[in-house]
Length: 121
Image 1: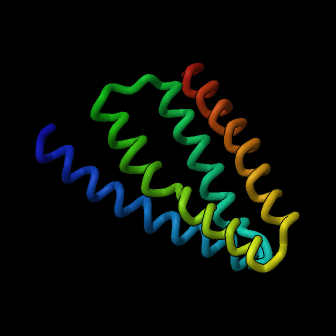
Image 2: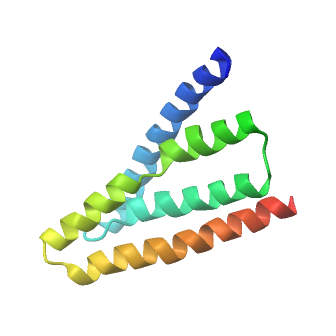
């Protein structure tokens, strides 16, 4: 792998993480902080994009840049788990279970939708 690809991973990854911070903040400020809607929106939109990239059957470098650098830095499994754990600490068990179930079901559906769209293009 050449230095240009590595530099692109750094730049695209940085952009993805800043975009995640922005989208999460925007959604959370609009919806409140009782439920982690910001993280949910980030992860679902990332799932659609990753599915789309998969459906496009990109080459190795393009898949690395699109999937790992862009979507990988944008989405966040660790925050999803931390927020779920926080909900359980606050004894909001229904919200914690809803966060897990909704994220998984809609995440798989979002990925399938993106892949279907990507395959059609």
